[in-house]
Image (cartoon, rainbow, N blue to C red):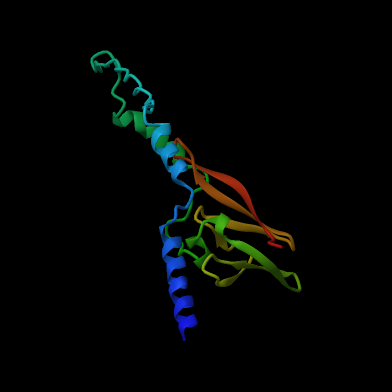
Length: 172
């Protein structure tokens, strides 16, 4: 019993001494505190702000850019040529941008071909010639096993509508 008490007391004494010992990192802590104590960080000065020259518009010598006669020829020009049909009912695949749609396959029955298109929400749609895809009024012109060719209508800088070729390739 005496041996057990001696062993127990000596064990507690060893644990107490181990808790009081140093971890050997005192010199590292001193170095971190004193290494950069005398240095101050460099801060770049703010760039100088350049003042813009003012321009006073003198309307007596210059034409009015907002006059109605300046806008009419442009409106007549945009009246001719291709335009999207504002009355046509939108198809489900026109809710998504063309680059978010995926062609996942084709279906064929005789001469009739359908493209199998997957929307970003995971739904799968069947599209044929003349159907519309994408948000730029893209109409399907040709369906092959590898891709779907379509014509999109894009509004140009002058307000006129321009046809642009696009395609949707089969995802592998």
